[in-house]
Image (cartoon, rainbow, N blue to C red; front, side, top):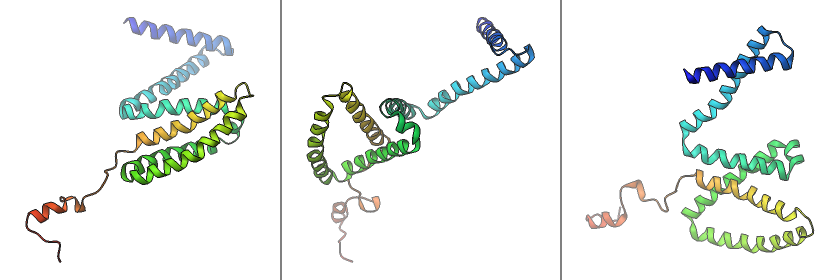
Length: 189
């Protein structure tokens, strides 16, 4: 009963504020208050239901996405406002790049290590040039760090979302070739 009184009190207070602030009569303000509270409950309940349904994987997705959107809004406000789909498409491509990186790391480790070495050879000099260019700017280093986080977060998300890939597959998933030889079977057709 105690919780019901709080809800009724909140409803009456919201009803009063809608009526006074918008200058509506009591009946219209009542209906508008019902609609607003219903919309608010839906807005707050839906993410909670999704989180409960999908569990920690959704929390792994929602947290970085919110942080990424806030950084994109802060670092590139004009570009984000003018071309939001371009920014989100680039983020999606980075997520796919992270997933491909995990796939390559698990299945083709040597080739991936060689590719990482080549990328390091390019990024270290480029990073030094960017740092040199931003030293004169007051917010330059902070913006560079924010851009690095904006690239690293989707890559990490893609890495986490793809499941582990087996390093090598066994033919027809029936065993290793040595097992057949030990059983007396030959490789000849």
